[in-house]
Image 1 (cartoon, rainbow, N blue to C red):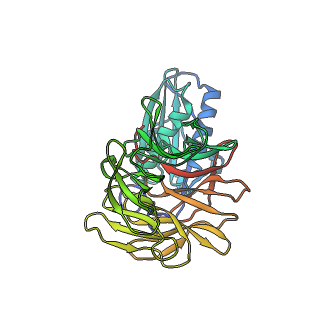
Image 2 (cartoon, rainbow, N blue to C red; image 1 turned 30 degrees about the horizontal axis):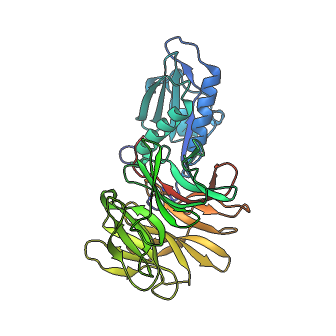
Image 3 (tube, rainbow, N blue to C red; image 1 turned 180 degrees about the vertical axis):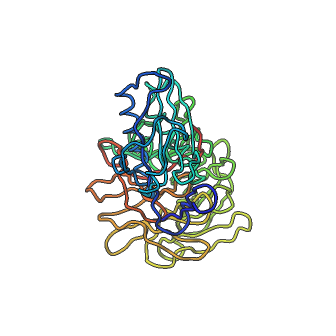
Length: 419
């Protein structure tokens, strides 16, 4: 799952590397700063938020301070205020300190073997924004430790069952900030973020036609388009330079098209007499994966956007759909039908090796890579109703994302990394 480097230089975690090394961290009791009293309730709430955030990181293990010989070995929040020997004896890699006064909170994480500060941040006006502060601090910590960012502050857009209709919502991966985007009735499906995180494209199925929906996060308005897009509009997605692509049925076959700035069908990207759907691009826009029925059954294919070459990715099974390419273009996560139901698989485009990431029960579908290429969101019916879950590209134990009442499907991550 992870590899840890502490012998040479700073402690770092390669979340994409081999190994199963856990990183132990102790959250030290919060302290008042410069004689200011400690706000007990706020300090406790902040610690609970941080604990919850860090619990999503599979390679982190929170160790109680009571496991240290002699208890809390700190007199303050700075490195000079901490006796690191008890941590070393207990084989604890990291420790976190928090300091409070009436105006701000300070958070720091230190390596216990070197005393080096991994991250240090200060936040003002925190009492009304404790969840956001916890998310920001944990995001900075994770970035300092792994070199990757975007998990704690990148929302997921998804489809949520609302009575007889399906509507578009967003939520943070920690299950906070649930926000309704559409209230259109009918079926609103296949949401996708623009690269800058400012728009969400989706398919709106009304009574008489398919429409392309575009939500603008700045104006909070939704525009809908259908002229020049054929009879069906499936799986819209943003590609290079935030150009929009979608699977359209214009001439009797469902193929993948580039859309113009006025949201009309432009050049054909993938064509043929078969069904081609579900395009997904890497961050550079040089690779696109998609689902095609050209082999007689749905399989995953890869198009090199520079050369135009198309090659088949999946060769096993008879039903492989919903591909999502990792931002770095190294892996493809997809839905694979097994005798026990649908499962999420991972294909290494470099080696051709495949790995099963999820194991049910029920059906696991709609994989979506996070902005770091490490976390994978997906929908599963394992509880009897489809809900969203998180795993990693290593197949760590899935964790449910709280989305409230109603089924949840088709997650897609905001990869803009903007706060």
